[in-house]
Length: 485
Image (cartoon, rainbow, N blue to C red; front, side, top):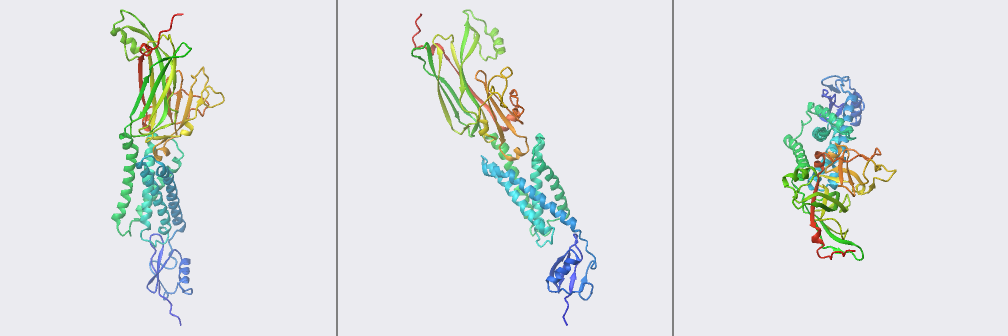
């Protein structure tokens, strides 16, 4: 005669799971009567009569009390796993470009923290199977809560950045639904008090708070403080050399030395950089006109200086060219020189030679330019291209056009793509713009009116300029005057 085991089936918990003990030792748990039979069968008691009070003691209900709603429990678990997995992928997509290729240490730290938060959410997704299962681990609920809090924090950060501009991006289809999901998941986990059972709840709370604080501080430092305090300085110089008479030609060769040096602490992208040489002609009067009469005319003509005896100043463009190719990188401390020679007639009617040298640049710590596209030259007069513009509508120009990316992926995923456009006119000042869309996808060359200051400031676009003048008589003093014919 065999001795039957004394089986105790405890009352169902809040989820409907009933704990089972056999002979006073914990044997497992069951969601249903079928699972109870399977459990006893694995323990070697396949013939236990569950309806026999001598064999099984039921507490908190009989053999028909199984309140588990398996479909709801499994659906909740699946939603938790899917949300955590999707949030982990989003964090990895955002963080990896900065963690692996950011230009500054702070940006790399921010990217690494996002990658780490993705790993935390992967661990939380794995813990869901235990927490929404038999809860054999006492900390699985806390791990799930940690993962959901991380998802809520990162999705809230993305949402706040997006609200600044409220532009459509494809990432909206990810972080906005995930933010709503994280609210639901957080409410559910707080209601169930998942932190219960954690051995040291204070350390667990600190483990949640400190990484979140570090992420926020790194983000603020990399996007606001560091770009603001790192100065940008340029040393530009333009000098005319000693003129020489051209052999066999009634022209004078004038050497010009141009130099640009980045004396600041940040490398930059060159958007457009050029130089232009002008010859100035003027009409003179012995008596002249009082300065108080001349200054209003000078201001109306865009001049910054006035001369009592020189009037009707006329600047004629003599030569111009690009100093750098658009898209080049000018590193910290880098200095470049350009030796250039231009010609003027020996009897040129100029009294002064004037040169302008300018560089428009973008800070590398504020953003990146896709230089492979931006460095390509697109003639506006070439038919059959998206950059074509009829000369009767637009001046003939070289167009440089490329994508601009911000200094961290957080801003890139919450903004529409930005494009920088530069136009170089041999006979006019260069122009540039930055806009949230490509002006050339429509087949038209839209006029460049200059970007809003706010948009240019975000990516650190600025300009450095210098000019120089020299008396033509001083340049030609060593050259014999041409003999009259």
